[in-house]
Image (cartoon, rainbow, N blue to C red; front, top):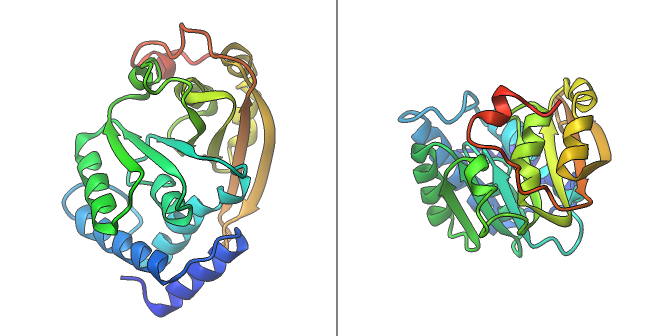
Length: 241
């Protein structure tokens, strides 16, 4: 699916994030790209299906947060994973990671399961459900080193979705576009209520493109109160602001 030109771009871009893409990993990325395009004809997974877009806007964008993950990170939950970004590329790159992919649409979960099976990835699972329900579930609550989310909702809403999953001392990494600064201003109350503090805000351009990205790293400094996350739909209808 990806021509040699884009395989080379993927390797170079990944190296910039401290990731070596060997032949096994490359084969997995190629199979992932093929399945993404095939399934996208049946269900709406992504508007980006060209080689350049898949390489840069999906794969390299997902890998861009790899250097921000502390050494020793073991467990990650990707909230609202959609077509598997950034969770699956992170798992391909980090062979010792245990990744949970959470999505509210059953069709997408079937796609994610097929990808993980075809790629021969262990220690990764796709689960069907809403963040509000899973964040209150003892099995998932405060049990992950890192929660990640990519373009799912505004930051105050994302904080309520994601911080309940994170262990105290762990991180929530929000992958955002150019509106990140405005969202940060609106998030002070949610951070206070939910037990998070901003550790880092990183602005960068995706490799081989002019696409501007922001990554917001939130450290969880205390337990999230048991009242959060609120019931399904509530965080989006009335965010903590």
